[in-house]
Amino acid sequence: MNEIHFDNIDSTNTYLKNNYKDLEDLCVVCADSQSNGKGRNNRKWDSNSKENLLFSILLKDRKYFTYYKSISIVTAYTILEVLKKYKLDNVSIKWPNDVYVNNSKICGILLEAISKNDIECLIIGVGLNVNQIEFADYDTKPTSIRKEIDSYTDINKLKKDVYKKLFENLDKLINNHSFYEKIRNYDYLKDKDAYALINNKKEMIKVIGIDEDYSLKISVNGKVVSMEAGEISFHM
Ligand code: BTN
Image (cartoon, rainbow, N blue to C red):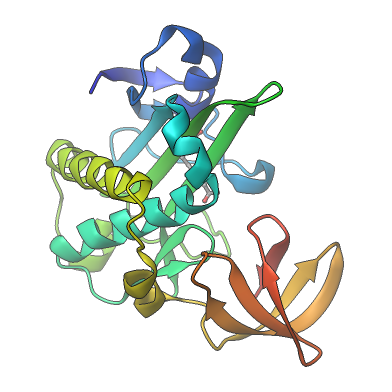
């Protein structure tokens, strides 16, 4: 594994996007801070310098591309496994790829694909809140490891634990291991009533839960449908 570290960069995802052609498969880029950190749906990802874990992994080998739809939830599950090792309780996965502790978001994942005609590479970006305690007032009510366990975490040690587990789990994934039986036990949205924006229409829905293919089963007006990431956003 090749790791490139920056004290500051615009965004570790953007760096990989601009440089993937010259970099090796599984190259990891991490940064102490980002001046233009990106979240999903064109949101920003803010993080105090040196207080959190910010990194992106480049997947260039085609063997990963078939698993495109599973990679972000498996990454979320990996973070959950590591957080449990760090003694955090009530950790769950908010489909499709946020990690929550109780009702607060502790980690976000941004999976991007670069494609011309075919996929050229995938970029997994992870922002895990570690030692930061003051956050802007987002409706995800951000939390961090320090807020949860009231002590500092060595970010370098945590980073090694996360990389190790993530490479292990990506390897399992491409060998057709199913994470479903594990993931279904940590389904934050399961059985929740929510407002959801589906194809730009606000609907009252009931979440049934994450399905075996990692899509989300919901019930809208008594009809059960499967949603893919990107097709739905929640307003709890
Ligand atoms: C989200 O929850 O909206 C996804 C947040 C992803 C943030 C990480 S931080 C490292 C990597 N670089 C970025 O610009 N974004 C991801």
